[in-house]
Length: 413
Figure 1 (cartoon, rainbow, N blue to C red):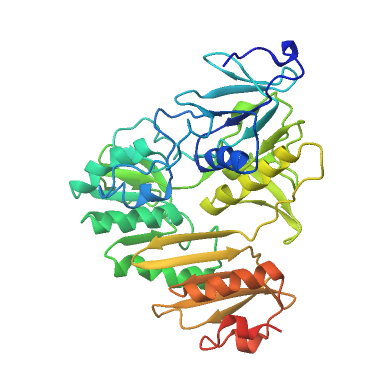
Figure 2 (figure 1 turned 90 degrees about the vertical axis):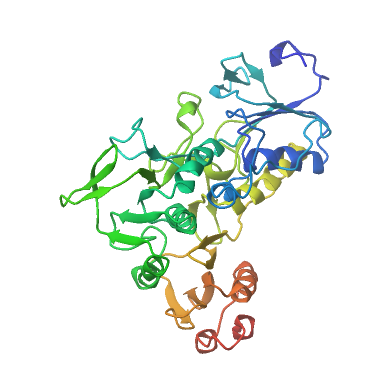
């Protein structure tokens, strides 16, 4: 396909959508465009050499050698999707209506930014032998032999990815120490009274959790904490968060949050530049449901958002769809299935359902009596019912909602 400048092409030429990023958000956008009836060209640009793949299995089956990969089951050629691998994009040129790559520019009529997020590096650790991230297929492949050798591993960060990696490493028979700068695991996601009950999961699985532990330095074979403690480490795995991969947009005119680096999309996932959309981990959007802007680094957001983007592109100039989902994610850690739906803030009322020292319990958050969020540990029915109640903005009877033996939907007013 010729990649001429848009301005030199005839008005009746085939319009093209260029999608930057071949993770789940990019792939699903391409697929959704065809499902919604887009008949124009679709170009999908991925910066990795691998066929597009799903990320959740990386911290589970792929890491433990139970699967060789997690490629999406998508026939790109049959769908007429022009897939380019190992082709990172370097810039966006809205005035010329093209994205720039080392192999040359690619013109677009619509562009979709789906570049995801990049992991935050531990200062002073970049390039050191034995220091790993777990974000890509290559990362998982490099960690496989580490787990197979049953090495002594230090995990920096007790967030979702840290817990999932520690789970896999213990399953593989490794000695695992997790160090967390905050006073509890999942400090950025859950309040102290909830996270406190998760801290014991580490010891139950044979992993050591050190909270309030800041890393002073990393050297081959050791991690030194600020209190002077030195931890032996055949390998170090860093899981201290991720930031939207948006640095390449500098100078493009696409408005980016100075706070978190996310593309500031509107309710229809449009950017500040005409005919350019953003979706998935790289984009934040305003939520009328929660009265705030949300940045969601979870799989379900990267699955749902592309449907809105695709339909809005296909509709063209007509009134588009507004994206305002109930956020959802799950995590498998230390033999427990943890699910979360919604969005809560500190001011919301927290209500327990069940005994948090047991195997199955839930926490719900109410705002002016209405269910806004739910965390379920081993209680999938609570999650399924709660997600629907959140979607509807349902008010709950607090006393019935606090009774774990009462189905959550039965607490609806």
